[in-house]
Image 1 (cartoon, rainbow, N blue to C red):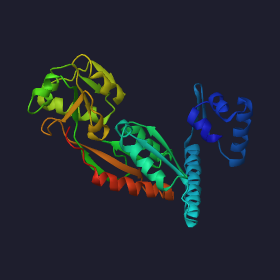
Image 2: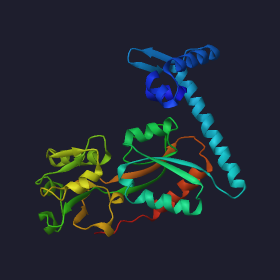
Image 3: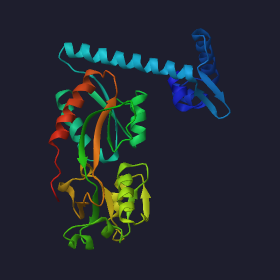
Image 4: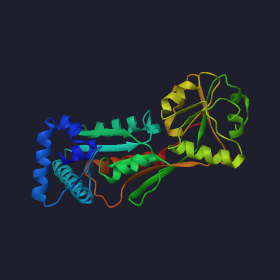
Length: 294
């Protein structure tokens, strides 16, 4: 109930989620505040927001829920039947190939474990960890808040994507300045790939002027088939087995800095068994990860 209002930011929206009337929800919150001995929400013209006391309370509630899930997972392990739920916040590049493979591999051994995957940019992913919405995060070039505990990381150079007949394919080595001669499709500024491209463009004194800026890496991959355009992606989001007309090559580090993909969790948090074991599997997969040239 409290969590629903905190997430929705309004009683009306939260009442629809928990399936009671807005007036009944208000009475429940007021009753809880009376019993708790303090107001936990700020009443604003635009809705309701947790006050400092409410933030402390929600943090405590989420810790208790996490501890209960961890104990339930440990009890299930005692009988040799691993159960539980693994929640993941990740960059878009993990969706097409890496995560489906890892989740499927894990569930072959532990079919009672369920998963949820939320696509997040590098700021949102760390926010999900801090509010217990996600157990682990797989993000490219995160912002590294204090609460973010790095478990594993691997290098991921920025690749340029282009259609099979594109003139870039005739070059022995593709430089960033070559790419900027053509219409460019780029992720928006809050994504790590764009941050690295911005750094590279400043280094060579060239402005970035994308003809299409998007939050969808899927759109980038498909748009390069049109207008002789070029796009950008990291290797873990590409698959040489399904190239068809798509080609990709890494940009040299002297043009665009090599980024890193990070696996992390909230610092100090004791994760449920299912999540911990899945992290162990992902760590091994990242250690073995190599992307063959196309």
